[in-house]
Length: 436
Image 1 (cartoon, rainbow, N blue to C red):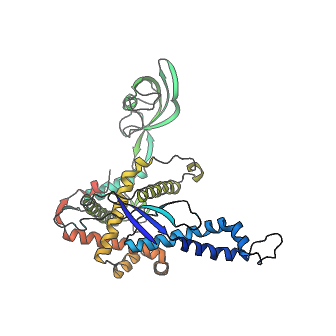
Image 2 (tube, rainbow, N blue to C red; image 1 turned 60 degrees about the vertical axis):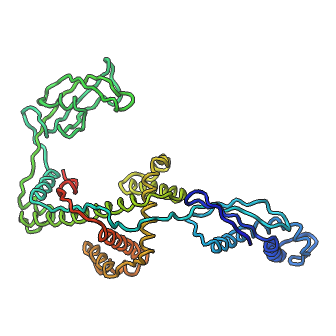
Image 3 (cartoon, helix red, strand yellow; image 1 turned 90 degrees about the vertical axis):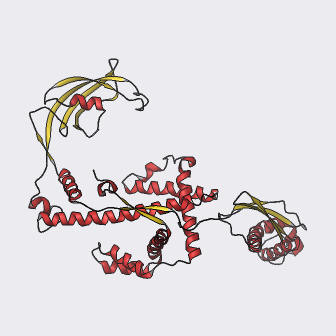
């Protein structure tokens, strides 16, 4: 067998492979002998058909059946000989195969890119630091109160934060338009449910009042209404002010704090905030380390790998939508985003995956078993039967591998940060946690 390799760009390879005619013929003869025991030809008993006749009638079938195995075995032999590892499944273009002639085919594929820098030595990394404050705890408790607010009708004019129930009819040049009419429609002033002109018009209305309000639609609104001016006839039916619950024993117990003590509620909120903050700080540092690593290694990536990753991103998005309650049947005809839209993020994910794989191989990293056990125990602590949870993970290889992968990634990040030029950056906890 002969082979030769041509480089196509940084990672593209075109390999020509020539399989000797005698090897093809030998494989064809083996297959023909197998077929001779099975074929039925009129005038001959099964298994007694002369090989010459079997050859005449079944050579094409036998050749097609052995060709795949021949290509697979010879390709592997050629790759080993050339010391090449394809990053993706090669595309095979065979030439015409004729009896008694050598068989030639071309395999086109990408190899793994070569990365120049597998560490962050000399690279500046900002390490985010933050801490939970009493104001953060207050903010969370305020949000908890808002989740249980009630509405109480008032006789005064509507102001920011009030809920106003309205009927309205919108017209453009005296004609009603689609979506411009509603009855008993609740609006909480200041939450941005309606266009600014509309909310401004509702502000100051009392229950029972009617008002005509001019509203300008922005240029980036829906195609039918973009840039148009409309007139809304609005009737305010009720105005209600928000009534927040007191932080009393009943309120506190509603959130699972059996003591009913405010100090215990604050302690629980602080603990949860600190746990979330620790996760966000770790995630932010990891992302900064990975971004810095990618900046040091801008390489060409195998297109097939990027396309496959983009496909996985589409499936992930669909699964998330299903988990959020969207009917799977509705998504069957849901148009997937164009590849060019997904390509930048897919490339980033592929590049990072290859980089981490190369670092792990280069540094011969293995997941720390004690850290794996610690993470599983931490995960189990929130379950009713922690021992059962731990037992499941310890005896389920797929589940265990997922935890090991997370721990191994943490070890890579720690190694990267250890060698980088780290500078601390103070961040407000509420910003990091996206607290309103």
